[in-house]
Image 1 (cartoon, rainbow over the protein chains, first blue to last red):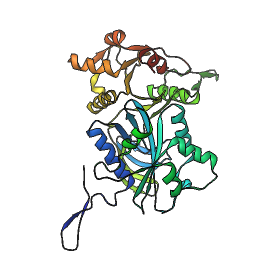
Image 2 (image 1 turned 60 degrees about the vertical axis):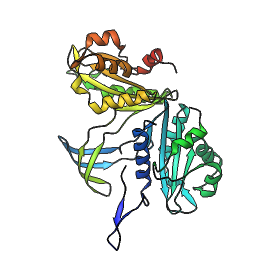
Image 3 (image 1 turned 90 degrees about the horizontal axis):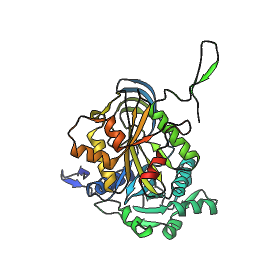
Length: 181
Length: 181
C-alpha cells in the first residue's frame, strides 16, 4: 500500500490519506488489496497501442489506440467481472460522451454471456462514487434520450460506494449485495 | 474470417487454408469466431509497455514489459476463462523456460478464485495442439522436477485440439467436455 504525502509550509510531512488520488489509482489500489488478501483477481488491462517503429525491445514510434473493451476485468468466486471507470468534475452529471460506443457494446456482450458488468463513476468535485450495473445503464440508454447521466438518477438507481482508507473503493462489497455468488 | 493466399508460379491464386498461421493468429481467429456467433467473449490482452517519452497521442520511446498475467481472458457462460498460448518447434517437448514464474503464479491465482485456467500448446513441426488444464499443469510442476513437458505426457494427460478450418482451434468444445457450465 502506498501513501501520498507532501511537505507543508512548516516543513512537516503531511500524509494526504490518498486525498486527491485519481480514480484509476484508487481502483488499482483496491485491486491490489483484493489480490493481496485473496479476495478477487482483477487487473487493469494495458492500454492498446499501435506500434509503428520498433527495434528489439525498444519502441520508437507508437500511438495510443481506442480500447474496444473496458478498462478492468477479472474473476471473483469463479464469475467473470468487467467494468469501466469514469470520472467527471461536474457536480450534477456524467456526460455520456465520456463512454465510447464500443464500450457500450462490450458491456452488452458481457451481460449476454452472463458476466458481471458495471461502471464505477466518480464525481471528483463531490468526492462521491457510484457503482452503476450494466443492466441499469443499458436500460437507461434505451429509455432515455439524454446526453448525460444525472447525479439524481444515480442516487436513485445506482449504489453509492463510500470512500474508505483501505481499500479505497470496496466495490466487491456492493457486488455481494446485488448478485448471487 | 480472413483467408491467406499467395500467387503461385503460374500466376494462380492459391489459398493457403491458413497453413503456416502462427498460434496467436489461430487463437485470435477462433476468438473472433466465438464473438461473431455469440459463443464466448474472449480477447487477447494488449502487451504491457513502459512509456518513457510521450507527447499528446504519440509515443516516441517505450519498452515492452514482461506480462504479469497470461495472454487471453474473457467469459464463457458466466465463468471466467484465462489461458496462455505457447508454441515450440521441438517434436518431443515444450521447454518449461517458455513459461514465466509470474504466469504460473497467475494460473494458481485464477484456480484459487474458481476461474478456468489452461495452456494451449502448439507443436509447430507436428501441427498438433493440446489443451492442458491449469490443474494438471500445476500437479505436473509439483510432482516432477523436469525442464520440459513431453509430448508423451501431453498425449496422456492433456486434450488434443484438432485443427479445423473455421474456427481454427475450437478449444471451447474441449472445455465443455472437461468442466460443468
